[in-house]
Structure formats: structure tokens, C-alpha cells
Image (cartoon, rainbow, N blue to C red; front, side, top):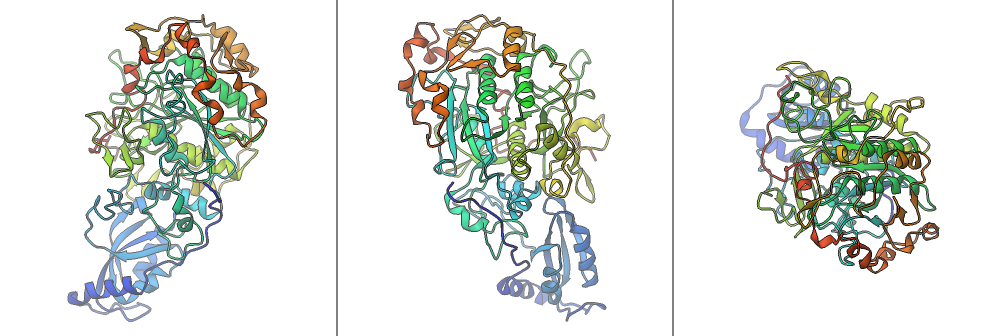
Length: 610
């Protein structure tokens, strides 16, 4: 990314001369009677949209009233409202403390104001300019918190260096544990199209966005950036550690994901590394409890070794109970109560969307973040990109998607901002901070999916939506010791949840990893507890890498991933074990596990909780 975004200068607020003139001209024909008590000449009425800083909407309304205006509609997403007021008082309202901007209320045509993008970043609730604003990320940027110095590990389908993720040092390629690894051209690259979108939401940033995120004088709002035509992720200065497990068709076995989590845990603090956050934007429908599940146990051990693990709640929402009347748990590993489980909220309705899993009363989601119609960076020609059912491509660069995958990625970026502020904070402290400062209302009239009604329950949205702006004003909670009540002695088979990778039509089942090696959950759990499951490139008795994975390779910070070229692998290691990547398929991972089947631009129905 180059230079850090750094501390944002306090921008001027309100309308410029041209915009003020536009308001006045638009209102001339309406006529007006002077309003008693106005501080300046009232003039004709003007229709405006007022945007406030988080928590300042009420004071802005009082200022509006004192200036002879009245609220028409409250707009919680922007901490503001639409109103009518004397045109002559617009400038005074714009200079009121807490008011970010006062703009003419005009009819707009979403998806057309910025043709090069294909959407309107100022009004599209799925744009990162909107998401970063409503979650308080822009407030954090203004305080100098951009994720600088924090590494976020992304275990997914790889990361393709598309514009916005192509700056030097932005992405560091860790091991490729996927079935694609045998191809030098495919190593670490996201040919599926999921991991890149997640990475962009966490820490993407266009190369030319720097000037609009620092020292701006006409910013979009009091803590944001002015040029909304540039893509900026939640933690734009965080570094991404790319650990690929999903192949070009999405194929990935639970054993690969466990190996990847173990690798991140053991290399989090290698020289030059500072992995504080681990993003898991997927999950399985495990058939065993979290305390036995090997996948959940791996994530649990990463947490205990100082990494804040963030996992998707799951996209199999629908009914809150199954056909037998049992509550539907969250996806694995999100159902582990020790990690941060993230659900989704639809900003347009302030409700939990119907696809989002909620968990149970015993293990609910912890928090929610925006998860509908989110715009991330697209991988042209990828598996997802070429699906006939994918109607979410936007312009030449963007992919729109809905799911708790997106929600988890946004949460990972938000936690990275707080990890920068609190470099010594433990995962328990960061979890308590975001949970304890979450907001439960997007406006005065809308409760964020927390009210009961229509059979809904309070645990659908956890403690509410993450608000970094709120968290910045909270004291870091005290640390505590997480109870060691997990054993991880269940089975891989149950952890897979009936979703398998196949080799020439034969499913990989039972207690064996992708190399056919027997898998002993109890033995692996013992190694994971002591962070010793990897020895060089060997995990569970097989060499999953070339010799370049030896610890000495991690002694410098200058490598960029070229040492992990396909030539470092011996193709025979795959072929002699009959695990030829080209013959593997993983159609089971193309549904709710990776994508949620939500690569669509269409509207999604939500639970109505008001």
C-alpha cells in the first residue's frame, strides 16, 4: 500500500458556495414565511439531507428546530435525517457541532451516478464508503487507526492481486494448501473468486485513495474521505496473510482448513509477522458438539495463542428449528463460544436477513455487521464470476454478495483497527470490547433486530452491530482466562457435515486427511495445544510443502511470496498419493459453505423485527 493513511485532518463541514446556491435556487419558487427564532434571515424553504456524526443526530435535530426547520424522515444509516428548513439557515445548520454535512435533497438514480463504478457509492448501502461509515471505521481512521502494523490472516480460496490489492506488501503469500498448488500459475491465486472479495473488504485500498483519506478539506463526512470513487476497505493499512485452502472449483477438505489454522497459529509471531486476526468466512454443518469438533478445536487453540478468530455464523438461516424441533446451531467453527461469531444485518431494513444463522439461546451470534449487497473486488474469469446464476457483477471491478462471509470479513477489518489501538490486547479483551460497544439501533425508530416479535428471539443479532466509533470511547475490558473445556477428540467425518471433496468420483471420508494419512484427533489436539502440529513442512506425517517452509525462511520480512512458487513443490508428491489436484472436485463447497449462493444483485427478504 505504500505510505500509511495516518491521522485524518478534521475536514470542513456543510455545503460549499455552489451547493448553497443550488439549495437556494431550488427553493425560490416555493415561497416562505419567516420563522420566528431563526438566527439569520430565513428565506424560502429548502429540502435538505442532514448527516451527523455518530450519536449526534438528536443534537442536529434540535439545531434544525431552532433554525425553523422540521424533520421529514430519520435516516439512521447516515446518523441523520431529511428535512425542510429556511434556505437562509442552511449554512448555520451546516456549521453546528456534530453536523457533518447539509446537502440538497434531490432525486437520485442509484447505480448510475458513477458510471465507471457501476453504482453510487454515496447512496448504495453495500458500498464500502457506506459500510465503513456506519460501522465507525471512518471515525477510527480520523483517530489515526487504519490497521497499520496489524496482520490479518485470511484462510480462504486465495487472494488474486487485482487493483486495490496489488500494492507492494499488501498481501503476503503463506503456504498454499489447496489442490491447485501443483500448478505454479495457480499457487496462492484465487481462481474461485471468494477469498479476494473477503480480503478486499478487510483491507483493500486503491493506490490513488491516499489523498482522499488524509488531510481532506471537503470530506464526505467529519471522519471520512471525500473521493468515494476509490475503493477503501475497513482496515486499509492492515497487511493480509494469504493462506489458500480452496481450489479453483472451491474444493477443500476440513483437514486442509485445520492444517491452515495450525500453520497460522504457529507462525503468527515469526520475525516480521504480527498476525492478530484470523478471518474464517465459511463453516461446516458439523454433526458433533463444539467441544469435540477438531475444526473448532483448531480455531480455539489459535484464540488461546493470542489470535482473535472471527468466523461466519453461517448462511443456512431460514427456520430457527429443524424438522425435529431442535434449534439450529451456527456453522462450525463459529459455534465455539470462545471465538467471535458474526452474523449479518441488512442496513436497508435494520433487520437480520433470512439467510443468516442466529445460533441458539445457549450459543447465539456475538455481534452482527452489514451482510447484504456488499460490494467487494471481483476476480474476472473466476469460477464465481462465470456462474450463470451470478447476477451480482457490478461494473468491471466489483462483485456484489450477501452472506455472513461478508459480515465476518467486515468484522475482521474492524477488529484489526482496534488491535492497532491496543497492541497488547488479548482476543478475549477485543471480543468483549466489540460486543460491549455494539449498537442496537440505527435510528430512533428502528431497533436493530433485537426486539421480540413474530417468533424472533433476542439472540438473533447478539449484542448488536459492531461500532468502532463506540468502542473507541470504551475502556479496554480486563482480561480473563478462557475455560479449557474443549478436547477436540471428535471426528473429521462429523466435522465435514456431509460435505466432501472427491477424487475421480470417490468421496474423501472417514478419519484420514487429503494425503490418505490416518488422522488421530486426540494426538492432533495434544500437538495443537502446544503449537507443535507443524514441523517444517510436515503436518500429520506428510510433507505438505517443499523444504522452503523451514523456519529459517521466516527470518526476514522482505519475501513477497515468490519463494512459494509451484516449482518448490514436487508434483509427484501429489500424483504418487493419487491426490492429483486436477481430478479433485468440491461441488459441496460451492453452496452455502463458501458463497452462500448469494452472488446476486437481487433484494433479499429479511426477518421483520419491528
